[in-house]
Image (cartoon, rainbow, N blue to C red; front, side, top):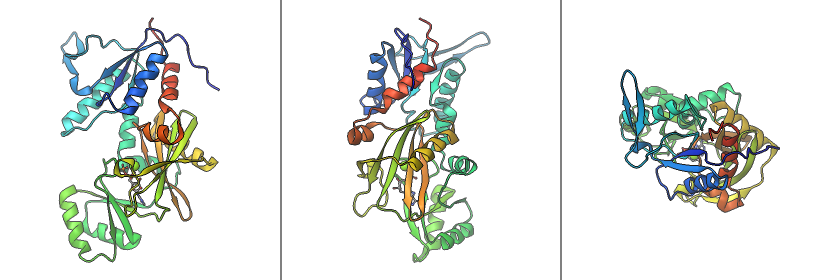
Length: 306
Ligand SMILES: Nc1ncnc2c1ncn2[C@@H]1O[C@H](COP(=O)(O)OP(=O)(O)O)[C@@H](O)[C@H]1O
Ligand SMILES: [Mg+2]
């Protein structure tokens, strides 16, 4: 059992978000208020940094006070340049040197990277589908011949966007791969796992799993993301799901995570981990508010100044 810290009154908790109407962002704000602290919504795009030999400051036209006690990251937002995305993560990184931040920039980046997260999963002995990442056409062709059916994914993708299925028997396979390589520069090829038309999203906060949903794919679709028409349905957690989800969260160094599992013919595989998960689907399907427990965990780590 955990004992939520009570002396949170007057604390200032930054909430990194892009859409203030997003269900999860609002739930974070509400739960921070419920604990008597002040939520400070922050869009990283609105922050400027100023440096000199003697000083470092952050400022924003719509925020007067950036003296925070802790920071919760709902979402960092999409960026169209490498410079802009790294500036956003570096802003989070500098907060980490003085206050608790959840999840950390490193954990969010580990989770968002489909190659590096898989490397960390493998190192943690987690079950994952066979995956090859390559910029070589011949290696790509060989991989598909071996796996027979693959999904090709962007290394930094989300919401099921840009994922395609390819079969080794496909006419013009080489031509298609050449086109994809030209477009993406590198191919992330993963063995397709035959499954019951759904995946499983498990919510983990610290050492606890709070619940899980099946995401049932739309008929005719092989991706089950809610943003692609997938339907959230309550899933009873098995011990195996709980254990895998907690180990997956730890593998990327996150405090909380949405862990995606898929039911293969021979057992569960880890598909991915999300370090900035939405709490909406599980709230709809199970009536659980995951943000409440996340805020409790954050408050356990804060030394409030007030
Ligand atoms: N190897 C696979 N085998 C079968 N289905 C997959 C596989 N990889 C992904 N999918 C389906 O595609 C969806 C999106 O894939 P995922 O790797 O989670 O990318 P994203 O970050 O875009 O959500 C999954 O939720 C699952 O339904
Ligand atoms: Mg996913």
